[in-house]
Length: 502
Image (tube, rainbow, N blue to C red; front, side, top):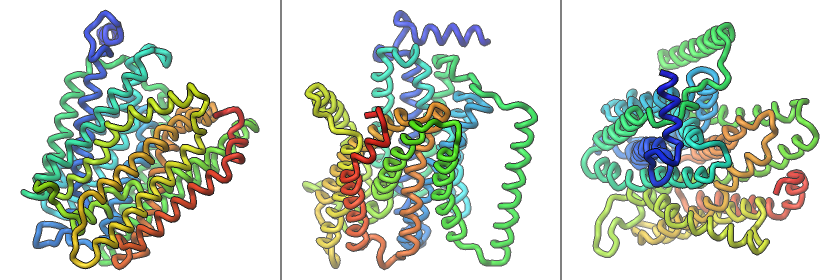
């Protein structure tokens, strides 16, 4: 079996074998699998807060906006937080291929649990999707890299570009299909359709697995039996303790959703602090590596502020689309969830433009520095919420504003994303100490976790009277603009900490 797998791998990367757009055939498998997984994720996400805030009479959960937004923020935070153990499980226990298959299966079960008309199954389903997404997200991109003959394979960058187009294609189509079914027909049918999407992605992955690289089966750092047993015992004890604690809270009648939101939000902030403290205390790192990590903390905090605002597209902005935005444009009626397709549409249109701009500026030795790009990204995300402040003011009373307001907000946010997110991935790999090279991408994802947890805490503390108001958007937009200006003002200090990395 190992010999057959290896032969398939050699054929998949061989220029003479069958290809997918000039790339290894395995790329088609991963492209389609990720496209359907993103279809399921973004389709469900487009409905999530709308369903939670819909009245019980309308088939929803009847939650307050602040609580529903906090649940959404924590859920999104956990998706990215769990990517950290997801990568560790692949490296130490299962290998990337089995971990992705397991993650896809768990995601599919989670979506079908959301399709059941019961609040308990809804929250259990969210937990399943977050867990499965952590397992899948951490490893499927790695498997794309396995298809190529090392980092210098000239097809490698093009392969990742095609792969990420699959991500955005799935994200674009999902709200148009799942959003329409969920809003216009039945919420739970929409969630079930997301489950069908993940089932299609999982089927594609399992059928095309023979075209994937043999590297994807390798457990790169297998864990010894004794250590494995100790880990399972420790994890079992913690899970048992948590189960007993929450059982007592529930049986005594004190359990509310806050008992889940607050601990997870605090953990989402504490874990990044713990990770950076551990790295900074590591005596194996030399002075240059420690300096680079000090510089990286600036980028991490800036990214957390960015994602705190950006990820509210599925919560506060989604509610604004439903309650305060006209759903008619040029005589055509559409569900409010369709606004969720704007960001991936803009990314597909603008990403090649930005890639060309950076190359063109580099040729003229005018390519902005990493700190300048981060500063611009923060200014853009702050500006987007300033536009939201104006849109909210225009929607005072029962007035519904033109869809062009949200179209502008998402355009500004996408421009900010394209100047910060790809650059953040790049600077993470450049500044990572050698000892933590493989772990730092998981640390980058923790910026999303931290930002979303801050958003959740804001939403719970401020409450329904403030969340989604004019001042809510104005204050957060102002914070991001101040953070962007501060980063730009202190850019020389950050550059000095980065050393010879530019």
